[in-house]
Image 1 (cartoon, rainbow, N blue to C red):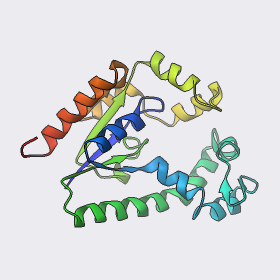
Image 2 (image 1 turned 180 degrees about the horizontal axis):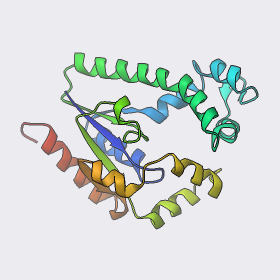
Image 3 (image 1 turned 45 degrees about the horizontal axis):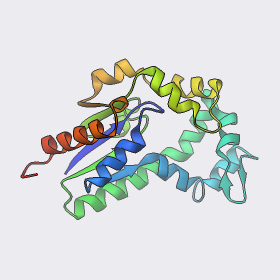
Image 4 (image 1 turned 90 degrees about the vertical axis):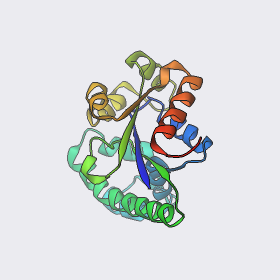
Length: 196
């Protein structure tokens, strides 16, 4: 089974690209969605114990938690020590299930894949990217996104130019949906042997 890592900086079109793979019948592990689930379940009491006042009614308040950890490397490490093992556990369950079912390829949608390369072994890396102006325009439309919040997020991410050097495949999402769909199909033809 081929494991394709899907990554890209915030606002580059990762979620849209992941959905294009799903439309082609490919199963996708969405690390962000797993974290959202953990923030409404298993991780909530653990986070509240370390960061009191960041949860309400059994759910992590992402804005409150972000305000506590963004820009504070020690706090961020504490949060990662809680969340990362739970995400790894979910990822391993996903991969085991996919292998058992004989799937030829799966996608791991992981925002910091290249930054934490040793943590997530993949067979190939697909980077989604777009010009900086497009990225900023997309992010300006997100609720709660401030300049300071964006800077704190980008500070943790490898520059896009460096990511491009490490990727096996690149999709420029600024070229439109039809172009991205064609790129996804092309990647699948290359990675999965047999007639398409």
